[in-house]
Structures are given as C-alpha cells and as structure tokens.
Image (cartoon, rainbow, N blue to C red; front, side):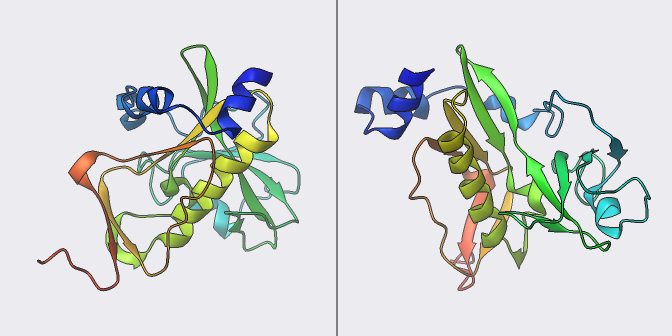
Length: 198
C-alpha cells in the first residue's frame, strides 16, 4: 500500500500514465453510485432533495444516509452521506441546519482500491443551463483529499457523465493521483461565453 501511495504522489513515468489513460472506464456508466459504503446505513431515501427538505425525523447528526439519486431516482446522483454540524467541501445544506457530507465510493481495479465520485452526486445536472464549476471543482478536491488522506486508496476517478456542463469560473485540475474521465464528445464543458454554436 505504501508503494502505491508513493507512486500516486510522485511524478509517474509516461508509460504508467499511458496505462491510466487507456484503462477501461466503461463501468462508470453503470456504476452503482452511493452503494459501496460498507458500514451501517441508518436512513435510505429516494433522492438527496428529500434529504435537503429534512422532513424525516431520522435525519440527525452522525447518521449515515443513502440516496438513489439527487433530483430523481436513478439520475446518476445516488450517494452515501454522513450528517454533520460541520460544513466541508461539497457539503449539502439541509433545512434542519445540518450538512450532508459525501462518503466517496470505492472500487478495486487491478488489485488496487480507487475512489470514485461524479459531480451529479453533489447536485450537478449536466443540462447546460446552470453553472456547474462548483460541483466539478468540489468533486476534484474530494477525490484528491481521499487519495492524500487514506493509505488504502491508490488513486481516484472524477467521472463526468454525458451532458453539457456550463462553467462560469476555472476548473482546477492541479491535483495528484486523480483521473478525470468523461464520455468523449458526449461530455461537454463550456464557458459562459458559450462557443458551442460555432
């Protein structure tokens, strides 16, 4: 584990980087987001929006909540969260004053454990209408922090599902140990100057 950690933090050889670039990431399209947490889940909800409304009396500090989607079931935003009084990167504010802090999914790839996150788990829509740079940057930061802070995590993947992601500020990719994966020309990041028409 220590050698994987060291490799992730160092300048990796081009041949190694090529392996990551060409790795099979097709599983990300059907990955069961929010389902890999192995501890006890206290509350199961259909959507994160139900969690935000906080009408369920079980939504209390320290509880683990799993959702099947963010805005609707199966929209790719399913996630597992820890409820806390402390705001963190990517926190979702609940109407009862608590914050839902995401617990990143993991997957073993070629014998190494990877962290996995997609911005839809933090509320991104990918519909080209609203600014998504906050959700994307928070996803990148969370992925990098996971690699940095957990010895058992080799690298992490930030996955952008097919869609159009409007960005009104910079996307920060200056992190180590994180792969940024989209769906080719089906995943579009564009600025608020919107050059897509040309």
